[in-house]
Structure formats: C-alpha cells, structure tokens
Image 1 (cartoon, rainbow, N blue to C red):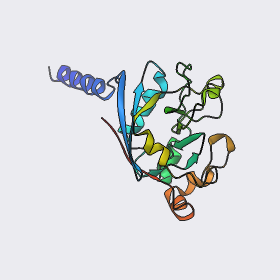
Image 2 (image 1 turned 90 degrees about the vertical axis):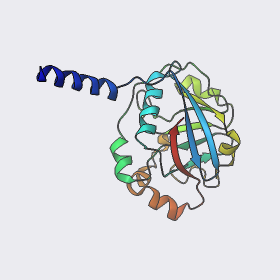
Image 3 (image 1 turned 45 degrees about the horizontal axis):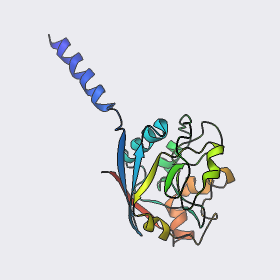
Image 4 (image 1 turned 135 degrees about the vertical axis):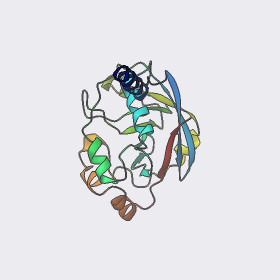
Length: 197
C-alpha cells in the first residue's frame, strides 16, 4: 500500500512539473524604459513558445540587457546577465518551427545562425522585416502592449555591444555578461524582470 502511494505521488509530481504550456500566454517585460507585453501563441511556433515559457519561469531574462538595438531593424535580448547562466544555456538548441506568421513590426522571434540553432536570444521587429520569413525566422509572439517602449530602447551602440549571433562577436558578452556591458555600454536599457501574466 505504501509503495502504491509513493508511486502515485511520484507520478503526480512529475506530471505537475511537466504541465503543458498554455496555448496562448502573455509575458510582461519590465525595463528601464517602461514595460511591454508579448503575447505568445503555441500554434505559431510550438518549440519556440515552449522555450520562451521555460526561460521566463526560470527567470532567465531577469537583470539582463537589450544588447543589440538597431534602428529600422530589431531590438534583441536573451543573453543572461550572469556569465555562468548564459554559458549553461548557450548551446541548448531547439528544433526549428515552420514560419506561420510574418516578421512584421512588433512580432517576436529567435535569433539563429542556421537550421536548429535557436537557443535563448529573441528579437523584436521594429519595422516590417518580412524578408526574414524566407530565411526561416519563425515569430513566436507579438508585442500587444507597449510597443512605444520598445521603440525607446537605447540604440546608440548598434551592433557593437554584442551584435547578432551570425556576426560571431558575442564571446565577451557570454564571458563577462552585465559587468562588461555596464562598464563599456552603460546606456543600454536593462530588462529588469520578465513574468507570465
């Protein structure tokens, strides 16, 4: 009897820990420029949305920086401020999702270097970047509140404060994290906290 109860409790705790990600959920991003809200849709990109949910629950984004903001293109974030955390997730890739939605202004997707290379880095389209669709960039959600905040994120450093994944110049960001960014790029806006609404 005791063994059956123990097995039941173990099964229950495992099923609770692996509860399915909601079909649609919202993520509030609090920044030094204000807050904005991303609405994620699993039917657009299930692998990407599951990873987003996992990262927010793990508090991965908290106290990080918008390290790449390129006017007329994208605002990018998603490298943890603590180097040990960033390194632990750096190579945890997820499978590609088909491109269901277009990379229009306000839509959010993962940066990548090629097939099945998405990890934790997200970008927000500041303009219509639908040309990215053909390259396999699959939006996982859309900014539904506070796009004016995204537009205010500091963009003066452009590609110099970490750049995109494809440029291959992110090693220092992974090795030194916030310490490097805050010292050499002090005007970058901070991602204070991400939470599921």
